[in-house]
Length: 410
Image (spheres, helix red, strand yellow):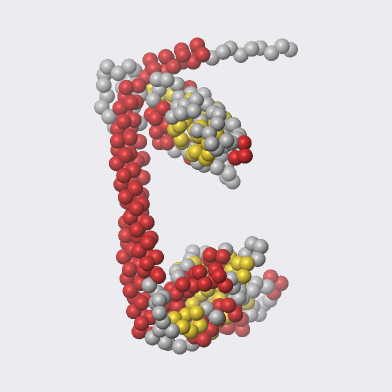
């Protein structure tokens, strides 16, 4: 049920929905003061404007359905729509309501998100009396301001957590210690290369195997593990055992050498040729310690030592064998691992709490908007001019300013 004095209409009945106009980066004059607005917001400056403010710019392609209220003259580009807000309609009232309308759900494409003008024009719109619009906007902005402050503090806390996590991981490798190499303490082998011609060999067996995407920095992503057919001999030679340390061979340069330890999560699992397996030769080394060291100290080392082709960086078996590893007593390695894991557990809990608070803040924003546009956020004032009179005045002004179309000669 509509609140008293409100009117239900559509966006197209109140505003004209217009297309933005292309303005490439090399056409802009960045020393200008006019904002250039794309579907994701302000993307540059120009010396001339396409439309006076206030204007609501709506993402048409890419960031479809995104809402940007621009108070001054601006240039919306061709990935957007824009609507000029007719006075005395409160532009912020309209912008907040469009955000509440979840226009992204009207996305009409599958590859590049896009929004059709007829769908946008048909978007339902609730019009409140102008004085009530102003009270609603003031109440929304007051409550959003508090949420902005809280979210700023939460994001600052998250940055501190990230710095503390980096400090905890930096403690893995002592500043002054003896060194050995990975090749001296572990047997290192590459994985299986897929041979499509022999996949139908009846003597082959089907095995799950790890790809580069499964081996992340500090954890294994086992949500999607594919299988491969290999000879029984190859399956036996490459079968992973708990405690094996995995290192990625190639990919983007900053991902070289990333990995984690195998803990027997999947029975009879092997690894592909782009994933190296290091199996420690002695109990004097802790697999977790070696992997933590590889993901921290090793990150820059592998970037420096990796070979770069046009689109791919890689490390070879010889390079991995020469990877320097601290030669610490087993007890010291166990102690470092335990302390790092203790700190990381605390930091993960803090990070999860921050994420939960940010999610709750987002839900509160939506709840505030829902209350605003069901007439529950501010009190009604009987003396307010009804919305239908406001719309009638806007329609009258529109008729006065709209020039009749000239008929073309046959």
